[in-house]
Image (tube, rainbow, N blue to C red; front, side):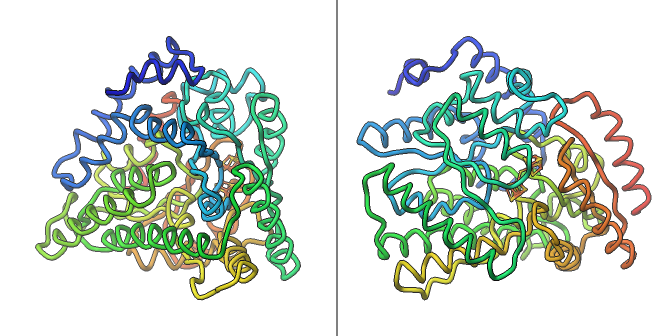
Length: 423
Ligand code: BJ8
């Protein structure tokens, strides 16, 4: 049996501080997740993942590195994980979603910065995140200004490679992004010492497409009324997708989806038929950020879809599997990834089209626009989103918040008033 404390200590972690971080999680998880009624049985796997969040998967990463393999950490859904894996490395998502890491982040970053960035750096600086400690290379990207500049600070503490993401979607931007992916491939080969062959890349492209389809299948089940699985549970599944073993994750997600489909066939739901259906759109929710979903779903409504990077932006669109040569595959990757409609693009009309389409597909009664504090891209884009939704008579409410619980009461009051209006 693995001695996890020794493993964490070998990873250079601060054990005493780490104990404080992990001691709070079971209580929160019990309240947010385990108290839900009639959850799909297949969610048990995801409960286990959270219960063992810093042990089971980390032991796999440690073993991979012991055998000479590399681990890479990323902070954005634009990083083509197919290439990381085709080069023989393991990719893990590192976005911080815990308030615990904010004070350490604020030691090196301004306070008036997005909590996701502060928590991510705080996780590294505090020595309490074994995923960070297991990484041989961190992969940043030029999306928002906060992240872009934070990589320079992070680079003081760990090796960082930055991908230059264009901010427009013209043909020349696609060409530049294609080139950037090529450079990234070379960097991965340099890191691992393994050549990326078209065969290996094709395998990883197929695997990641399967992972996307598994999530898509689970999401499809949420279109039913009554909804067979809670928004909180689906959010957790998506969050876990960023660091779990992809093949195992696909199997476990398909099990939840299959159970949800059986429930639909027998008309069984986790919320009563007719409960207000909410589409959440905006900034990503990194684990363990379940704050907004918990408020919505304990106020009698159900989250049926997330137009976020911990939602549809992560899994929509497949990479074309028909391309044969490395050249063609890189082009296919560039094309697929550039379809993600992040607010860092200007203009970004695709995101508005997506939101309108998803409202219809998931039969949402209203939209809650989730904006992490100090995320200017999404905050400014609210103007256009609100205008488009209002023009179609779709109710929308904007929520600007951070990871702390300080505003939870106030948020709950606002959400309840919004739901009352929908009813
Ligand atoms: S593709 S949304 S994962 S950049 S860190 S932009 S919340 S101020 S995370 Fe993102 Fe990639 Fe875009 Fe998606 Fe705002 Fe915070 Fe920046 Fe953020």
